[in-house]
Structures are given as structure tokens and as C-alpha cells.
Amino acid sequence: MLERIMDSITIRNAVDIAIVSYVFYKLITMVRQTRAIQLLKGLLVLLIVAFISNALRLETVSWLLSQFQTMLIVALPIIFQPELRKTLERLGQGRFFGHQVMDQETFQRVVEKIIRAVQLLSKSQTGALLVLERETGLNDYADTGTLIDAEVSSELLENLFYPKAALHDGAAIIRGHRIHATGCFLPLSENPNISKNLGTRHRAALGLSEVSDAFIIVVSEETGVISVVEEGRMTRYLNDDALRSMLLERFRRPASGNAFSLFSDWRKNIIKK
Image (cartoon, rainbow, N blue to C red; front, side, top):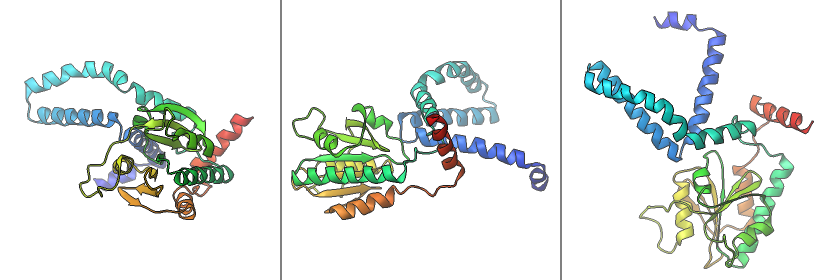
């Protein structure tokens, strides 16, 4: 039977399945670590219950679940309205098929501006929390702060964390070559093994790193020490060269030539025209 199924699959079927699988994968990636994922889990539980009730012929339970179907059809677009809007926005920006790709020159400029800002903040012992977004979307945390959508600059980053500035508390979320939001609140880590010498900024950085793949830079307000937090791990006492090396390694531009990079370059050329 398996052989007959395999023989019946054509190249067109394989391409069709691959496209649908990739779209579902991107959708799941976009709602991962957001409030929407909890709703999806709830829907999955309902589907499992419906399957079991049908298999066991539990007529009352099946009838009750069937009454929810019409309601869900109306309610789902409302419940997932923020995620649907963000998906369409990303599709229009060319980000649905991957992150926006910066050219090497822009990438180098952004790294040097971040390094310069961290260097100045460290020398003045100004506490700072910079979050560089990667694959995991951070919109839920960005929504807790103030959206600014400004070009990354060392002067702006330094001013954002100036102690008397209105938005100095919280984190600045950097998306690509732009500061997306600032004054954002992050989840605190509940790891009991964290040193008591670490303050709220470090605990917030560890907390976010435990639920996302973000690259987080922390500048201590007490000592000016520069730290990097990734995947629940903290690397402390970094100098400019070490921080630069880590940034270049983590955010190195992917090799060009793949279909999605070609699509992104083609789209940019069309827009310029």
C-alpha cells in the first residue's frame, strides 16, 4: 500500500506539499512565544476531544462541540486579528519568506553603532538593555513599550538610556537596522541559581533568553560591565572586540544564491524602479 501511495505522488504533488508545509511552518514560527500560541493549544485540545468523542460515539459531547463550530468560524478572525494583520504586513514587506537581509555595508555600520553606544554607556556606568531580534518574534514584548521605528544610531541609543530620559527603564528592541521599540518590559527569569549580585536588567535578559533566541546586551549600572545573554547563558566582562566578534558571528549575512535571497533582491530592485 505504501508503495502505491509513493508511486501516485508526482513532482507537482511534492511541490504543492512542500509549499503548504513551509507556509504552515512560517505561521507557527510567527505565533510562537506569543499569546496566540496558547489559543492554538486550546484549539488543538478541542480537536482531540472531538476526535475521541466521535470514536467513542459520545453523542452529547459531540453535539456540544458541533455547536461551537459556527461560533469558532466567526470568532477566530477576531481573536487572531493582530497576528493576521502582522502576517499581511510582513508579506507586504517581503519578510514572510525570511528576515529582511541587510547588505554587508549596512550590517557593518549597525554593528559599529551598537558597539559605540555600548562603549559610551559602559564608560558612564549607565544601565542599558539592548535586545537584538532574531528568528523568534518579539512583538508581544515590543507592545509593552513605546514604538519608535528609528534608524540605529549610537547617539540615540545613548540618549534612550540616559537616567533622566522618559524611556530609560526597560529594554530597547532592535529589529534589523532599526530600533523598533524602547522602554519594553521583559519576563524575569525564575532560575534559582542566578547570582544574587545580578540586578533586574540581568534577570530580565536571562528571562527573555529562556523563551526566545534573542541576542541580548546588558550594561551594568553599578559597574559598567558589558554582558551578553543567549539561550539562558550569560557571558560577562566583554570588551569591544569580543562583543564585535559575537555580533558578527551571530548576525552574519547568510550565503546568497538561495531562492528566498534571490526573491528578496528581485523585490527590492522592482520597488526601486
